[in-house]
Amino acid sequence: MNESYDVVVVGSGAAGAVAALRAADLDLSVLIVEKAVKYGGTSATSGGVMWIPNNQLTPNDDSREKALTYIDSLLRGPVQRDRLEAFIDQGPEMTRYLQKAGVPVMQAQWPDYFAASPQARADRSVLCDTFDGRELGDNFVFMREQFNRFKPFGRYAMDIGQFFSISTQSPGWLMTFVKMFFTYWTDIGTRLIGKRDRRFPQGAALMGNIFKQLFDRGVEVRLDTPLTELVVTDGKVAGVKVSNFGREYEIAAKHGVVLAAGGFEWNQELRNKFFPVAGSIRYSSTPEHCNEGDALVAGMNIGAATEHTHGGWWMPTMRWPMASAANFEETWQTAFDVGRPSSVCVNRNGVRFVDEACSYDEFGLGMLEDQRKSGANTPCWLVFDTTFRKKWTVGGLMPSIIMPDALVPKDCWDHYVFKADTIEKLAHKIKVPVDALKQTVTNMNDYAKTGEDPEFGRGSNAYDQMFGDPTVTPNPCLGPIEKAPFYAVPINLGDLGTKGGLKANANAQVLDENNNPIPGLYAAGNNAGSPFGNLYPGAGGTIGPAATFGFVAANDIAERAGKRAGQSQE
Image (cartoon, rainbow, N blue to C red):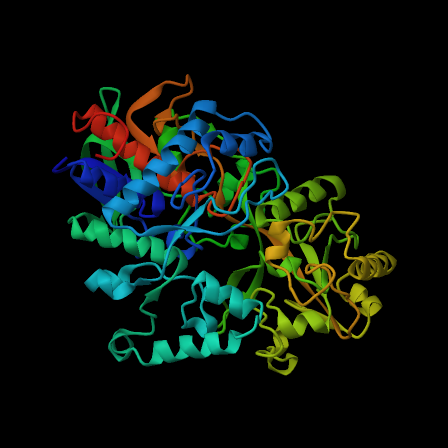
């Protein structure tokens, strides 16, 4: 092997980027290899939130014990206890390290996803404020962009506050958009470079800040370079074999390889093998054909064990024709759309199956469970009325104030979105039993009057209410479905990635089938099994552990290489 580094990191999302940054700060030479043509991974396209219990970024009374009480009340199956506790202990260390390294993380007010559970809180999520992408210099254009669902008209970047203001049409939302419009078009220097907004919010803010520090430290990110094989010498992972436009070559890793290449949601064969309801790769809301399980397979090929591979980070999605290209579709997340007032979700029997305003992962689990019971889910239907249509998005279908029915492409009707003057006619169109759908809508209208949902408790907790409409009373998540015309769209079982992967221990070392560490091999992020098993505890429950175990992996590599002692940032 002609090239040699102390550490080779495979993947450039949060897990890989934090591992590389920490390794560089511990005086290790680092190379990041990335399969895609852009760096930043799926993390750059996300909301950019990290769930870090007891982060102590502002004074509060959260604690290790409270965090574990919350998680323990929710776990759905066995997990590695020491790995779970390592996340709880090392997450705050990781956030403090990022702050010292120049990444300005801050606490966000976001309710835990199970707000009624013991020791649930609203201060465990961490994010970065908007980042000026031009600070990346020539690397500005090579960072992965957010999807159009986070960019009105495919141009204007939105931070989380702007997203909620515009998507809920809260007071002042038009002025919010006008300011975004003005900021974008008066940035003449960036417009001369291209269409991309220099404002990097959400996941782009987190990854922009981290990569600014990586580039300042001289760390190379090698794009168009997928992993093809792990190189094992004398029982130790000693490097990687990669390819670049058909040329294969090896890179030595003196002290460790960190696999942080995401999950396997874009590999249909692995979905069919592991998932109880496989679903299509096309329903995934992650970047197309990037997370195909290459690093997972490479690990399995040298005897690595796996865990939690039956689970995805579920996200309801819908398909919508791509406006800018013929014969292509986009996948749109519908995480918050499905729980807005004046709507209801039903299976193909016309029956509700979940609290529609619950977290997107719980919604997906509800789809799975109902599919197992009824065989009439995946997809399900979101049914709504004109009141909903005027105000809310449904994936790529913009509110009628922006996209009136006359502007909806004619070939979308009765394929992507269905419309009828009555619930009966709508039921016939979408092939749902008429009486069942009418009864479900009647029930929802009754619930809207009382403000109570006796079936699933929709709108009864802080998380549900966060995405409701405060102008709707007595329950911001329940509005009548009574104003014609009526609409329906199919909702697919999509995902944000996979919860399962290579089995790794509390030090992020990959384990073999006998639970022994494979020397020189580490995994973090969706390349490894989630420390929570089949649980999504709060906003950032994917990226928080990803960054934490990237940090842990770098610490362990450095300690074994004699570069440092102990676990805290010097």
